[in-house]
Length: 377
Image (cartoon, rainbow, N blue to C red; front, side, top):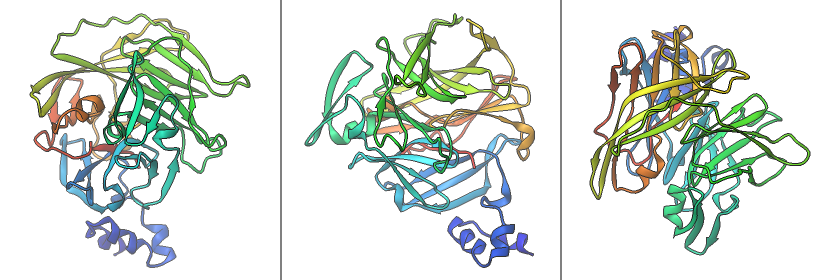
């Protein structure tokens, strides 16, 4: 009977109240409706983020099924941008205040990270902000624009109650900083050149970052002398891209503890002054095994799926998911620079099937004020 009650709730706030009726119900009812561990897509609806919709992915049909829509009232997201999603937490940036906060969208608990103004090599001066862009030069922009544009991604290595909790911010495309509660501020991760980073991930005791050209950085924050960096230059069989094509790279740790580099190929569909849209055409996947000095291309994920976007990129076993199908890539749009430069931007979201190269896009005609993001409960 309790399960039948739960199936009839579509507002998550109401479902939370159901779990709070008594201790027994709170214990028996899962935190997530239906207990589904599939990726959820958070879709910010409305100009001020008062309401958000989380879509459950039905991988069997390869669409976002309407019966899996649940509504969350999140006024906490008003005037915020999502720049990360890890361990069920969102990392949000305030466009007007420059704060960096962690939000659990289900419990609505907030935790503060140091603000943008605390990042190394970022200078605030009244209504202006100066920072390095792509490593080569320092630019100055209005603070509101800088707050929208500066942070590319923030990841965490665990839930915030872990004693070894750490966060890493990728900003200005060329800078990395890490935060530990004991430090109380962002600390710079050293680089030996002028990199153009595209993704960052935690792997064992290290932090790995990938450059546009496939060069790999490994950072160790546990040394007594301070953060140390090792640069790897594994050979990569990249193809030359056209002037209309861009590549976006993601790092993923596999179940057997090797490292994947996912190369996403996109083309510019609309390139006007106030409007822009990109389309994903294909994915290339490369694996770097332990002690190897070359990326080796792989053609199949087997029974696994990859989930990429503003979330910490992950691999998931399809057999553990409801109605799932392996050998697919779930993707959302994470092109911060492109999104920030135009008034109207149509986000590229979908599921790519590696077996036949087909792609099921969704919501390609919607201009979200804030990029949708995957949540992994």
